Length: 238
Image (cartoon, rainbow, N blue to C red; front, side):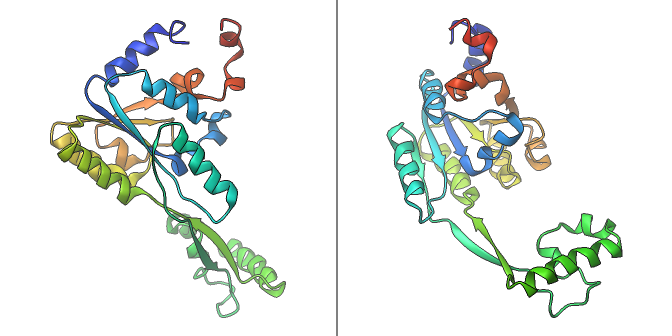
């Protein structure tokens, strides 16, 4: 594959031009597949990264649920050579009980709809949404569950530790989350290099404003997608 894309390999060599560490916020990038229309192959990603001597490791962050399939997935990722960081996924109950609020109130809806959008919704729309929630309440549903397992603190901490203790000069972040704007900004201000591996419209404004280089992962689709999703015109050449 590298022989087919020498220019792309040179571009990656320029990115990985010094001691580098990769940080993969998997919960963040996993959802990009809906837009990309192709899925990540973690084995192929690791193989690609391992081809560059300057990359000192790849840290993988993802939560573990109480399902056997979740625990098995984490173990499989470890066997691929990633430095896996995990913790239990939390189940949060969000109330949708509107029995104690007016039909005109947005008090419950604020838990699910951002305020800028709420402000432009008509009163009729708010009433309609509350009436639908009331129907759910009557049928016995008063809350919904949300799974939560953020790694922004752990990733930010690991970046700074790798900077101070492990001689890393280049920080490769696979995420578009705004929570990483502060550590990335600090690294850049200290003369380090930071690169965001992401896809268009999946990088927060805050992260874009840090001045970190943003590399579109669609450029390396054929290196990191599932093998059966390699583009047809490339598959014919393999």
